Length: 438
Image 1 (cartoon, one colour):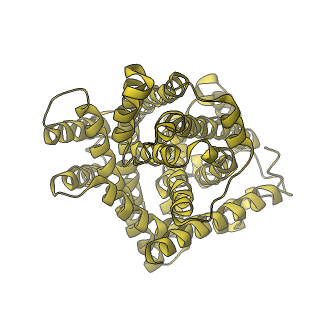
Image 2 (cartoon, one colour):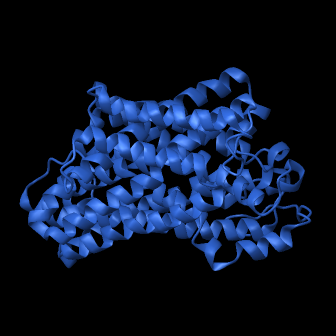
Image 3 (cartoon, rainbow, N blue to C red):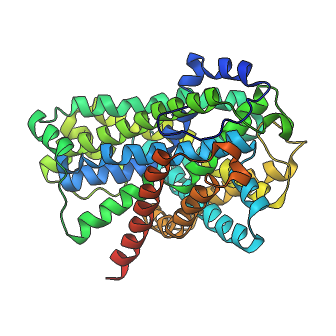
């Protein structure tokens, strides 16, 4: 068990825990689920937000990355823990233990946020492709959306997981992009180690946006569902086989998530650094999307830096959009009791795959109704602002509920970090709402 966890009562080990623990402790697992979730967290809209932060505030904004790191670990670990212990996805647990009106209130907010953000991400990917390929953007949007949909419907869970692992490496492009930008070492160290807070509307709004995009609701549900899919992929298809987890599994899951969130956080850091060292320095502070950042970087840091930035947007988009649309389908099917799971063939879970298709087509369609991608992200932020804080509060309550977790309820350390994270999310959402009206 990690140092953050110390349940007072030892629960019986899962009968198959030994074999599963050995499987989980492999190198592949160590760079597995947490890496995929971390990469999905750095979706094209997040890249645009981080790039905008670096361009507008320079290296003085770098300190936000290390501050957010433990919060990101906490959110994803608690979600993973729910899936490991209960053997079910997040919304299946909510359906079992909470009222229907509460379940569907949360569900509507999460699905709307996922679809709107997926649509904006498809638009962001298309804009990035358009920088290098002279094809009408509508055709690019449609082609990218259909390709993403085909992967979800006809790819097995194992295939999708392995493709996602490869796609997540596209984010390493931002390390190269930052290096090619030749940042000033002294200002970089100062901005990283010494927090600078400005009590201006723009700065506070950017803090809120960065917190919101780093701790989005879709990564909560995705992680719990991935843990369940992994157990099923290991042969534990029945609920009674999946239910319960060993200390070794929880410990391995923690290290997996620490690795994945460190990767995501480092990418956030290098995106801010690359735009701070170029756009901020040149006085180009108005960046509205990841494509804008990529285009602006090219003349300042060289074509290679701009190309790397663009490839990162496209690569991670192919990972993030399925996470959002499939995640929304998981949430809907678990809330209604319909069969679900990427391990099932389309014929075995028709409603699940129909939901994926509908959500993907809606996301594609948002780009054909004259909806500005950045305005769509603001709308997604509003929806997430109402759904993410109560969802995190709910996760804290569930992981402290012995009826759900048995002896695996939270220890003191993870509870302290969890409640700090919950407070930060509520404060960020409240701050975002205030910034719009004041």
